[in-house]
Length: 262
Image 1 (tube, one colour):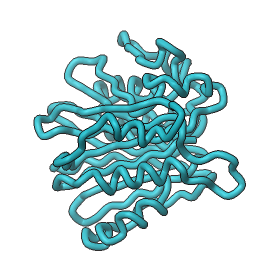
Image 2 (image 1 turned 90 degrees about the vertical axis):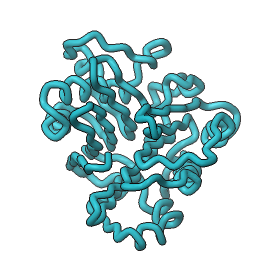
Image 3 (image 1 turned 60 degrees about the horizontal axis):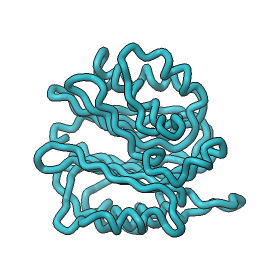
């Protein structure tokens, strides 16, 4: 199981507290579980002022992947209003891939003209090979150089669905197609439609989703680090929990947000 966090806000937001949340997610451990949420990889992605997508990630070395990631970044003055981050705890069958950066998340799909999808996923997609084999376009998977990771199939399937049906219908279709467990955030970027879509299906480490009257969105696998780090911000901006799924709670839901400031 992995951990995800992200937001879509009206104004740029300093990333220092977001990285603090990433550090807390990496070591977050549930009662009765021998391993933390992260520790096998880490990555972030955000939209730059010029509209381009920045993405950087690392695999597992000897220490903390989040600390290793921070050594590669200079985030001074970086204040995006759209941000996604991920800490990895690989499924058992993928344990041998953890040292490889290309097997960490976020993933980016840019295989169709005029669209880009950024994704972060917690869980396991049991029918990922069948979904990959059912795609019509020629898709490129960066993790395939080591081993195709189930999480990387999501953005490519979603890419085709968004291209054909738009984001709102695409997340509904993806929800129906998904077998296994998933907490999933998908940022789809088209010139005429930009959307953040969230999917929850099965039993995962959980999901909390906050929204406010301004149409801003913030989500995380765990509520504890967010409310610890951003408690005052949530109150100031009138955020309320829209969704709360606890650890290992069976759940089924999907959402698509298209705020005008995205």
